Image (tube, rainbow, N blue to C red):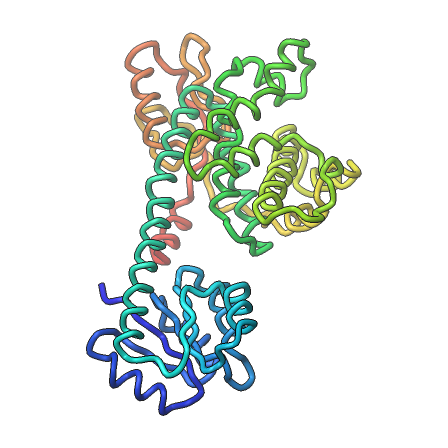
Length: 391
């Protein structure tokens, strides 16, 4: 794959000189203003390296590179300028987070060397992100699938709240979305240590004994202890640990680092969606559940409640049908608890049928047996056809 480089300078002669000197080595694009450069980033990206002049009308190089950082964080940013004063360099590093600061005139061979270094840095950044997205998410998926088989009730809850968390984070346009979503997916992983009957009582708001209450309240700490040892998941582990903490118990943001603020917000998101889901499971409508949450003064971050209020109330077109294990298909959703003939809970109401779940049900059907038929929700044929057409 050929990585592209973008040069932004208001002097067309400089751009032309760069093209002549570097076009045989690099895939170059140019822009004569910061605004034109941003449009190119949006329409023609991704760019491995973005090089900008400092002194440009309307938008200087620091402002431009700062906006590039927001819109294309993987792109490696460099500044090429005749302004070599220390303050310019400091501002460029702090605000534009640049990789290299080059002064004019810059010999072509030196510029080419810097671009090669920038492309190599870009490859490292992209490789790390892909490792994070593929390997780490794959590992998390394995953990959640294990939870689905060991404790279907907890898995079902984690699946539901992940959808709510994704909506909130996208609505608020938060960065590091993967951390919030993983925190939701793994928020119930500590429930592997909680007996299913205790979870049933806790979710139904039935009275718990002292020992049962201790077991249930400790599951976030158990989860954090499991996750903190996985590289890159330390912030997620801390989000999960704080999922039961009230908003009023957090100190003012003050001098908190970006990571500390992100972790606190992640815990606050989990708190509001978990309590929202709890009320829905108990039979409340979405509107009534939100009213209840707002009446609990100090427990929830107000901006998260406002974001949750924008959650679409219409579900995808679905049909409810009675099926047996032999008719069950992936992506169906259980509309009632599915149990083995000996009473063991195999799939919790609201849980999506995944491949491991389907295999487990088929194995039980051939052995102990499964109580059949049972209710499931499946996308209607018309909705499925529309989804296929839009894919």
